[in-house]
Amino acid sequence: MIGRFFYTPGTKQFNIRPRFYDPDKEERDERERRIKEELGIADEKEKDLKNFRPRVKGQFRNPDAWQSKSSESARRSQNRRLIWLFIILALIFYLFFYSDFMF
Image (tube, rainbow, N blue to C red; front, side, top):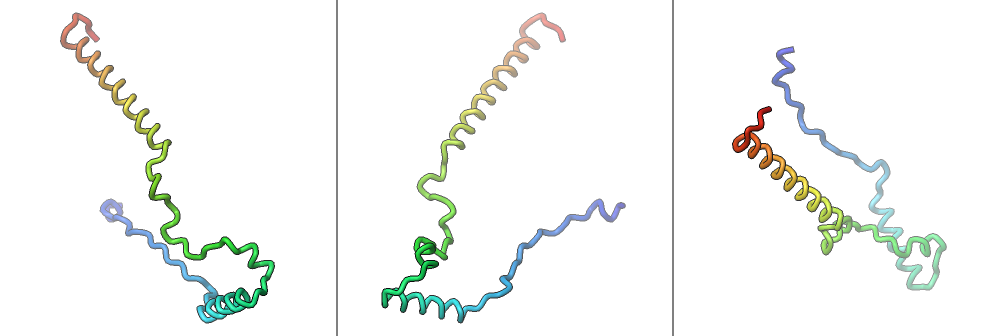
């Protein structure tokens, strides 16, 4: 029991490797797609995937609107709570020191 008192677990690591990844096949498919595009041959699958962008790094967050309206409303409600806390503490301070009110 005392040995577990000072035990701190290590950080958990996320390490996932794709099972079937063939870079040669991807290059071959990309080259085939470009050749078909140049010749004007189109597959139905490619029409569905026309707007697909495989490189999505950095596209998860909109840099222009990093402060959303929800964070603005959360900040306002937090400020209201803080003001109410100050008012209540000031009232308790006044009642404790400047009045004859006893708890």
